[in-house]
Amino acid sequence: MPRARKGAARTQARRKLLRAARGYWGTKGRHKQQAKVALVRAGKFAYRDRRARRREFRRLWTTRINAACRMRGSRYSRFMNGLQRAGILLNRKMLSQ
Image (cartoon, rainbow, N blue to C red; front, side):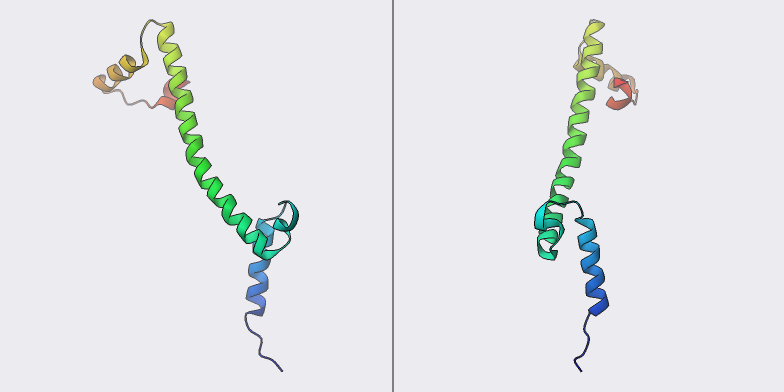
């Protein structure tokens, strides 16, 4: 009788991988190797886009603050410089709301 090697662990790992790839198109959601490649790629995109989202929000907040400053006859750069010199610790997210 052949020796069983990694039977339960291998099946469990495969199930976990395929569960994570559920909903992917075609073989990416059904075959282990394709799913593995797709998950690695999805992880890269997710990592990159989390940082991109933060950048985009910071730009949005800056634009909103600038618009509010211009309505009051000031400029964004002078406004932020004034806040910094006065020692007011408000971030752009708080200021934009």
